[in-house]
Image 1 (cartoon, rainbow over the protein chains, first blue to last red):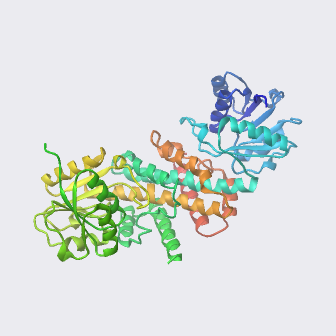
Image 2: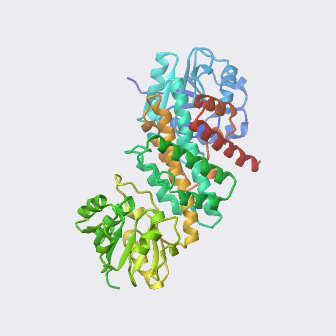
Image 3: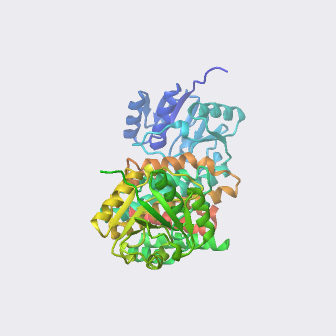
Length: 259
Length: 259
């Protein structure tokens, strides 16, 4: 099989566009153009990639093999319609949106299951890609493209991807929010979050081999009421108090089911 | 300074006792005895260490330099009184309990800030120790002992330790509970949690250099109402629904404050 060399237009210039475009280029794919409605971020990304850019759909490059929509979920449908493309493969990168939201004969999904921040570099070899396409030929192309970037590629349909995305909100967004609440609590006492880093690392690494259920520790799972009360007493009221309370009660309840 | 070689009695045979006793022995400290009220787990641990054990306080070895109480928080006070020791250093290993809960002239705290499960081995070099003692001589001994096990040792008073413990519940116990909820969600669709491992790892590693606040991603921080509604709609009701809702609302609220 000949080496894959696609001509690609990236639509969007946010966190995902930023990392993905760079990685595709690094793997010998040709980024023809960045198209983004706000010209400022299009320019930044295009400069980084040394490629063309536009903020007007009239100037969209129509010569690409693949159009990757790395835009806000709510914009996918509208943007895909506005592109006015015929017989081109158009994919989005979202965990939450159905493939068919792109109303086009050659639609697909190219979803990197990872958390992206511009400031933080990423090793794509550790990013699972979830692939879906209307046409099997396009599926094969996306599969080849994903495999160039990462050894972890899954065939995931729109329903499974939606469920995966809900689970990812818990595992990633909400656990980061737990770190943030911990940081808030420590800041009040001038203790740096650094002291919790080994604990955070170990908590995330424990579940590689064991189920989260098997390694749940802490006052709630021990049913240690006096520590729970002391903690709630310290937190007093507000968001930290409410969240401590509901999570503790849920852990207590879940354990009760099994007694 | 001569090499530290303490004679130690471990009181308790749970997760912390299990890991700590083994590590102390590995570092040339002499574990004289395991004392635990339930004889079964005392035997298991004593066999592992090839040391003496007892389940009766009358047979407690009185020759040790240091008594480490690795027992449930609520038992610390009572157990420490029952030991009937004179002029011996007695410490507990709890994040939540004040030093003075051990009513003894030579009390202290030897708190390893980590999550312990018997099934999971640990590298002690990555465990921060939080040390406190009534007498400065004892503080120095505990400091030397902790430094034998780990390069990360903090002088933390009882109030700071309590705050640290509340923060650790968020950063560790609650984030593990988030992994567990993600696992529940995926199980219903026969998707293995494995697919989220890279995301979980990246989420935990991101905050080594950046603040959790700076790297918060997901539908809530993006104020992506349609995805939030779709997720809540999928979760329908129950604990997952309630927790998704309160965490999302708190993230939305926190962001509003800054607009």
